[in-house]
Length: 217
Image (cartoon, rainbow, N blue to C red; front, side, top):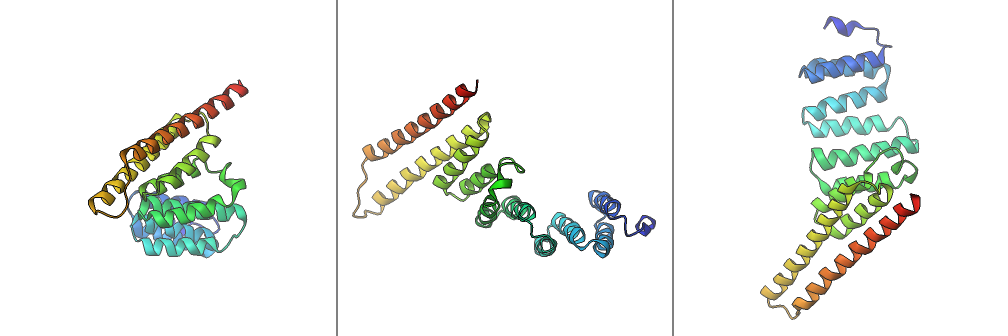
C-alpha cells in the first residue's frame, strides 16, 4: 500500500499501478488505485473502475462505471469509441448478440471514424449477426467489410459461412413446412434455384473485387 501514496496528480502512473495490481489479481488494491484516479480525473477514474469490475465479472457495476465515464466527453470520436466498446462488451463478455448489434450499429453511424480508427467493425457486426442467426444481415456486413479490406482472404471465408448458413436455414424451414403439413409447398427445385442464385451472387461479387484489384495494379 506504500505505493498508493503517490501524488494524486500523477494520474497515468496511478492507472499503470492499478493495471499491475489487476494483472496480479490484487483487485482490492486495483480498486483503491482507481479511486485515487477518480479524485483527480473522474472520467479516467470511472473507466479504470469499469475495467476492474469487468475482470471480476461484475457486469452491472462495470457497465455503471463505463456509462459514467462516457458522460464527460460527447465528441463524435469519443461517442464512436464508446459505442464500439459497448458492442464488444455485449458481444464477447456478456454474449448478448442483440445488444451488441445495437451498439455496433450506433458506432457505424459515425462513418468518419468507422472506416479509419477501428478496423473490422463491419466484421464484428457480421459476426454478431451470424451468431444471432440473422444471416442476410451478416452477409451484408461482411460484404461491406470486404470492400474496405479487399486483400483479407478470411473475410471471404466468413462470407461463405454466412451464405452456407442462410442456405441451410432455408432448407430447414422448407422441411418444417412440409412436416407441419401447412398449405404451402416449396419444391426441391426452388431450394436448388436458391442455392444457385447464392453461388451466382458470390461469383459476381468476387469477380467485381478481382476487377477492382486489377485496376489498381
